[in-house]
Length: 91
Image (cartoon, rainbow, N blue to C red; front, side):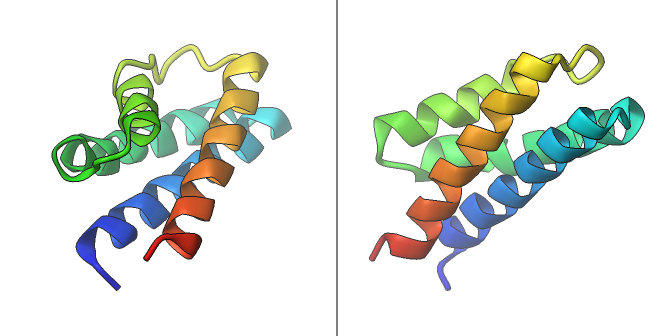
């Protein structure tokens, strides 16, 4: 597994956690995982070649971990799926 796939997969997992925790009402835990997701997103900006993946990483980096809405949680779930598909199906 390449370093980029590891970073993409880790970001995907953390975004899934943010989405599910926020939807369950565990806002403090969701905020913590969003902070962790930012740690994965930062090095991805220099390693990714696909524009849509860089856009996801930028959105994660620019998000507010204190105020995660249910709409944000749905977006994080979608981003997690996109990132997971990239990690699993890219060469």
